[in-house]
Length: 162
Image (tube, rainbow, N blue to C red; front, side, top):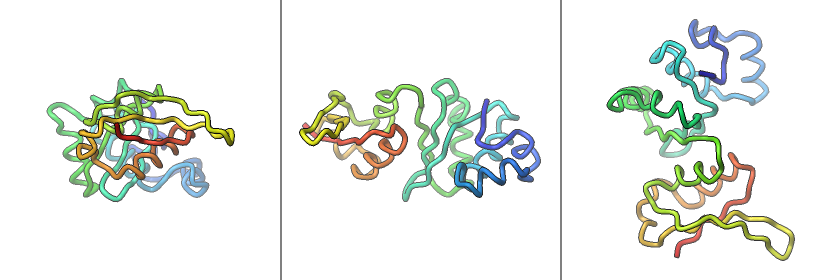
């Protein structure tokens, strides 16, 4: 599985010049380097992820759908170890299709639908309609969810409750 840093850097704990340049250029973060090392150690190079985002309460880990189970580990062992190591709860979000990513971000709240809204000024917004009874189930602030989904999908996101 692919990591943001090369396998040699993940295995040895020493950052090569290529990965160092990625870090300096902002293509990867220090968190992604540390998480890559931890996952390499846990899975022997068989666990990968695409990106990690540090928020106030969580570390959001973006991973391919087929790699989510490996990150979580048997009985949740891996995710528990990682949460203890980093001092925050980890949320694993599957990447691939945009709608699946949106569903993962608002889970366990139920999404009623996702619509594309074309505004008069030419702006295009993806409106995620969530059941208003599920608002208290959201694990993050609505603004934070909108911002995170928007940064991943490159779309303007609006969450509405009905």
